[in-house]
Image (cartoon, rainbow, N blue to C red; front, top):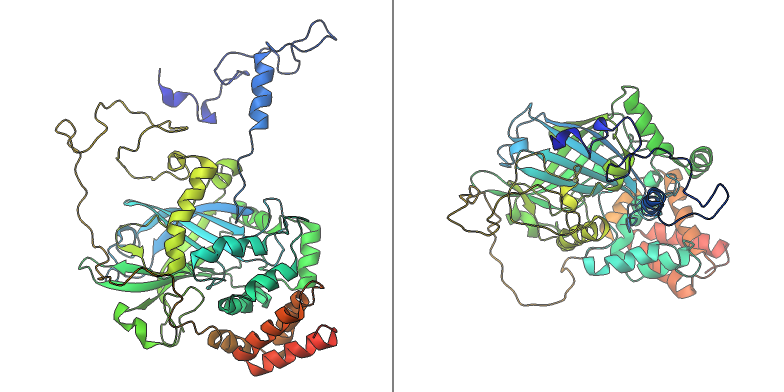
Length: 492
């Protein structure tokens, strides 16, 4: 018997109904009862199995990024970057690598509208010849907090009130009044770009600083940027109400319909690079995830293009079970000391093991498309076929060997154990610069959104004064105009 001609592929379905164990089912309409009107019998295994499977169709929802849409395609190198990295999939122009991408909202539930003001996830899985590389980013280049210790509290503050299950502005204002590092993120979230038109018209960012290594072992700090070929478009509040009222899945449908019609969305990948020796030359910490690198100092360098030309074959298999983790890198790409990145390296894999099981990387959409070999055996839902007798290393009965060495981060580390803030917080300069770059109308819309949050009746005078003080340090006029709006609302 050839197992490839049977389950788990529906391409080999039987022409008649069966149980999961393959037994034929001659009646899939009626339960087994005592007589035509009598009670149902527990011995009706088909009924029990059918209901049991139905009761377990849903898996745990993602804590964040629950609502999302996926698409498949390819990444093609367009520019030579071999001087920066020895990553095989970036080895030369023209090289193509299959990818799957998941776009998502962040805070709200799996069935929530896609028109809510919320960051958007932008995660790309590259199926390279050296294993999977997950570039797990957002549509905003910075983040709310710089240390993973704050991440659970941050998410709790942004999520609905645990008592009422309603997202409330006073909780957000309260939490972030303790964290001025979040100001830069709010200049994106409460800006016009806070509600993308759809996923096709959205930028993507790696957010964190990573490190590239070339064949000689030279290290280069890097930030990743995705630019949509069709441009960036967003929705204002009244537009979002109209779009979301008509279709709460508008972004997912737009992506699916565009690909089905042959209008394939495309993004260009760019990088910013910095020599590690230059990290201390600026008034901000380049590894601080709440900061951007100025493009006039660190220009965008083109790398390649990504085209999404296939929709998922099945939503559950290739979206709900699709799992990303920033720890998944390939030779030539590694981590920086970014504190939040260091936390996500653990947390993302941990949440997938909870949500999907310890063998989640055996699920086809998550599995590498290259040959792989290790002794990670057994566990729940392990379905990998093995007939070897040696499951330890080393062994004279199994000639598997170590892979060829690849360059590693060689920075020398020293210091004492401590819990400390970054030396260069500089929480106000970049938010102020961004605000001053807008025209007056755009500034007013931002101020209106900020004021709406602070006008929540449960916000205290203390919280409002703290926020006005923060924004005044970013830009004196910004602080004055926000205070005026709060005073006009009788809240200051």
